[in-house]
Every structure is written in C-alpha cells, then in structure tokens.
Amino acid sequence: MTGRSIRAAAATAMAAALTFGAAACSNPDGEQAGSTAKDSAVVGIAYEPDSLSPLLGYGKDGNSKIFDGLLAFDEDMKLRPALAAKLPEVTADGRTYTYKLRRGVKFSDGKPFGAKDVVFTYRTILDKKTNNASRTELDAVEDVKAVGDDTVVFTLKYPYAPFAQRTVLPIAPEHVAGRQDVNTGPFTTKPIGTGPYILTGWSKGEKLSFRANPNYWGGVPAVKRFTMAIIKDDDVRATRLRAGDLDGAILPPNLAKGFKTEPGRKTYEATTYDYRTVTLPTHNKVAGDTAVRRALDIAVDRQAMVDSILEGAGKPAYGPVPTGSPWFTQGTERRHDLAGAKKLLDEAGWKAGKDGIRVKNGVRAAFPLWYLTGDKLRQDHALAYASDAKKAGIDITIKAGTWEVIEPRMEHDAVLAGGGAPGDPDFDQYLLLTSSLAGDGFNNMAWYDNPAVDKALEAGRRSGKTAERKAAYDTVQRELAKNPGYTFLTHIDHVYVVNDKWNGLTTQTEPHDHGLASGPWWNIEDWTPKK
Figure 1 (cartoon, rainbow, N blue to C red):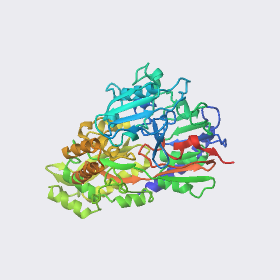
Figure 2 (cartoon, one colour):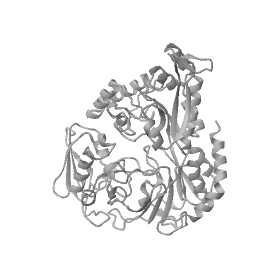
Figure 3 (cartoon, rainbow, N blue to C red):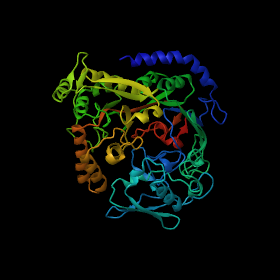
Figure 4 (cartoon, helix red, strand yellow):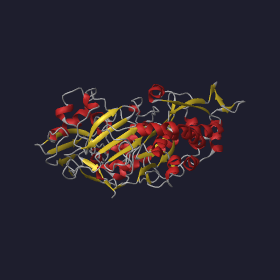
C-alpha cells in the first residue's frame, strides 16, 4: 500500500501554508497558540463531542476537566474519591452503594455542590426523555436518593459488579441544568461544573478553550490556560505540531515516529482498549451472510496491519476484549488462513466468477466500506481489509465520508468503526452486541442479532459472581467466533507527542474516546512547568 508515501507528500504540500496560518492562530485569551508561556498549553485532538453536558453523555468515562464524578480513576486505573469523600460503602448483597460527599465544594458559578445535584444527574440520565445513548450503562439503578446534603444512596435492581466504575460520571448542577431543556438548552454548550477548568469558549470544528478554576477544591492548576484544537486530519495535526502551532497532539504511530528524534519533544504511548473493526450489517445480503463473515474473519491478516499500519504500536483484535485482558477467552484467536477462507466460501456456494469475484444465487460478493474522512488510520485499515478480502474473492469498495453521510447508511453498508472502554467486559460488549440496541445511533452498528449473545450479556451484567460472569463472557466471545457480525482488526496503542516543558505527564489505560479526555493531559491540572 502507498498510505505512508501519500501522507508524506500531503504533509509536505501543506507545510508552507499551514506554518503561516499557525503563527497567526491565537487562543481566546489573546496569546498566540504554541507560545513559550509555561502556564498555557494547546493540544491537537481528532474529534470533538456533540455536547458538553454529562446528562447527554459527555465525560461519562471520567477526565471531563469541566466536571467531577463521585469517583475518579488514578494513573493505574484504580478508583479514588473525587466529589465523594471516600470510596462507597457496599452492602453484602451488592445492591446498595452509599456515598459520603466531600464538603465545601462549589460549582464554578459559586453555588454549593450537594447530594441533590447527584440525584438530579442520575435521575435525568435515566429519564427516557433525555437523549443519552449510554443510558443502558445505568440499567442496574433502581433508585438514587439524597440523605441530607452530604450522603447519596444508590439501590440497584441486581448486583451490578462494576457499578462503582460507573460513578466516575460527571455531576451536573441542578440549579442550572434543571431549569432548562436537558436536550437543547444552553447548558449543552456552556456548562458549569466543579472541575479544575472552566470553559471559556467552544468554536465548533475549531477549538475548545479553558481557564483554570481559581476555586477548584483540588487546588488551582498551574496550567492556567488550556486549549484543545479540533483537527480531524492526521496529516494536518502533525504539520501544525511541527510548525509550533501546538504544544502536543495525538498522532497515528507512523506520523509520531517522525518526532522521536526532535529535541524538546517527548513521545507517550498509552495502552488502550481501543479497537478498529469492520461492521458487517445483518441487512446486507453479502456482509450478513455467516459464511462470508467467517471467511473474512480468517482472510484478514491482522498481524500485518499491526506491523505495517501501527508500526508495532498495537496488537491483533479478535473481539472488543483485548487479548491481554483477564476477561479474554483463550482459544478464540483467529489465525490468518486464506485457503481456509476460500474453502468456507466454496462450501457455502459462493463460487468465483471470471473476474475472480464470487457469486451466489445471482448475488455478487461485493459491498461498500465507509471510513471517516481525514482519518488516515481508518483509511489504511480499510484499504488493507479490502485487499485481503479481494484475495478471497470478495470485492469491497472503499468510501470516505463524514458521520453525517455515513450514519444513514450503517444499516446496509459496512463501516470501519472504533470502540472500546477499559475495565469491565460489560462496558465493551453490551452496547456493541445487544440486539435490542440495533440501529440505536452508534450502538450495535452492525445490527447484530444473536439470542445466545443477548442471553449471555444479560447474565454477565446481572450476576455478582466472577466465575458466572467469566462463563457468560466466554460464551459471548465464542459466539462471535462462530458468527462474527464484525471483523475485529487491531487494538491500537495511542501515541502522543508533547513539548517537553512540564513535569507530571503520565498516561492511563485509555478508551476509544482518545484525545479529548485521555492522553498525557488526562491530569493536566497536576502539571507543573519545568524550571
């Protein structure tokens, strides 16, 4: 493939114009972006949220900067208190969680934080009128109530083992968000929280700007100004970093490689649950055929993708659960076997035509595969996947588009998608595979429908016993091997390049939602300038 050479040529062609533009780019406080000020940082990320309201899903995995959750994850992904004064007390049956709240915390508008805000946040998310696509993540919650101003009690329908991890969800102020339309009100773009930073501006498609919260309960951050530049194109992000427009950026591994020898910069690699997968829609006559799905699952050369596309910064993926996870089911790895793929298709009646492309009952083995415009990592995965598929006699046409173009086509067209969340296997699999969520936005994008998987997913989230849960998720992963509604390709290590002028930078194990809440700036409130 020529992806690398195309990138290099594009970057060279853009460099002169972008270098000039970078010098003129300024942050909302009047300082030039990429300035030498040690109390400000400008970073480049690939995506922006649809909303900044936690009631609609923003920051649900933590690190939202504007908000805090009851709990938070530390560098080692262990839970620690945040708005809660300590970790929750849990009853023996695993169905009651009691949180004592931190005293003296205020929202950025000066109003006090209290138990009523926690109750408001969770009850609003659980309200079916609220447009939160992740509502089922709180399905276990039967009731949440305040006991005085400083205690919140959750009662669960069943002993949902990872519930405490769900309470990193940011808390919204009832006195603001509760007085407006939850789905369309100004809070969705001009939020108020208790977090270390205050939003000063959001120019959609361009940047999110923040300033340090002078009254933050955790201490005033040393980085006083923080800007997230929204740069969807990987090449442009790399060029702007090199031009001095950015202090840091997330980059594909092969672009980050070019910065490793540059003085004054450091590269950070974060292990992740982030995967790339191809959706194989049930409603597509070709992609929905089980034999085609199984053939593609072994025709694809995952290790070659890791080596050539990711420059080794990742590993093969056989499902949403990474192979290094204790929840991964050994024996469900699929080896690259082109001959085996051809045999499966032959036996299922998919016969090769004169042009080498297979046909069955007058249907040609062909379908489109969409990827997000400007995302070179997805483009390279799509090209490699189509190349491997063609060797087996399946013709896949690669197409680029925005999500506005792609989303209406997802029921019938394949998509080079991404996903993944650290921690419990319920986080990775329920939204992706449950048949009742088919067609629900970006949940279950393949319209996957497998009763055995549905049953196992419910058993996995409702049991409080580790052995029972492990058996349930083993069933899910074995069923995916039998009838893969997705072709999982790689798990990707996120790579970041940052100017070396601060202390305190680390990384966490990251979700798919990279750059916005993750990256070395997951704890930017703890950075200190180097002397």
